[in-house]
Image (cartoon, rainbow, N blue to C red; front, top):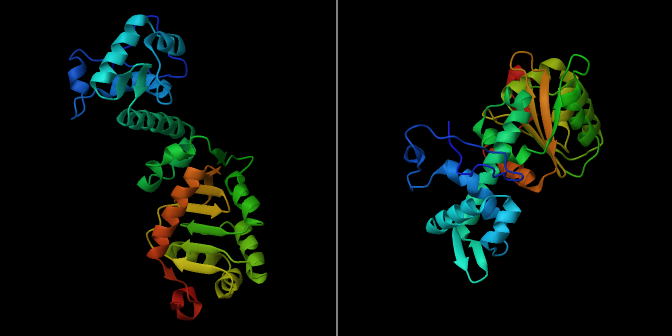
Length: 291
């Protein structure tokens, strides 16, 4: 439990974090650099308020709805920490202060995303996703229900229907309706890429040999295999889709979609990293178990 640095009656607009400290005091919560992370969480709104222009203490009191005493303590402490600097026009956030404010923002977005995306995170625990979950704080969540079991794959069907570029990581076998779209694209010489695990290839091959052979032998699609893919993901034009599937049944459980540019940049980088280590699928060289 942590005790807030906010004076009684202070109310930070848009800042929902409150902390109460244990009996040992603040020192038990210091970072190796001597900073109290819980105090910085409380003070982050001030760093945000002063990052674009300097503000005096009176203005900060009004904008942050804090007391005069709190404004004095915070500006003094943050200046001592070199996260804030005093100028003739007031207090301004330093470069280090901007970095701290951004870190706090990522933390808050990560907590919000972890709470909202729980159905997906129940299926995906790979650090490649969890360390970047803040990028999906505002993503659309699609969860399977008894009444709507295909809800998680509907975004795939929508965006995979027509596109300029499509790239995917496939951990489990493709749902039949997605495979049908893939067959259409293969027959129409539509370019798309997919990196599949051996398990996914086997599942697709077992589900329908004809469908598998149609896509795998077509010239336009580029198929690769990689045994260490962390989760199923699609990058279809500007949209990123991450899907979670049941480990035992391979049925879709949940998915998220976003067109956030930062999320897409992360997804493209992740795809490229796995593609570098993937092997191009050559039907003529496939092992007998897949033929």
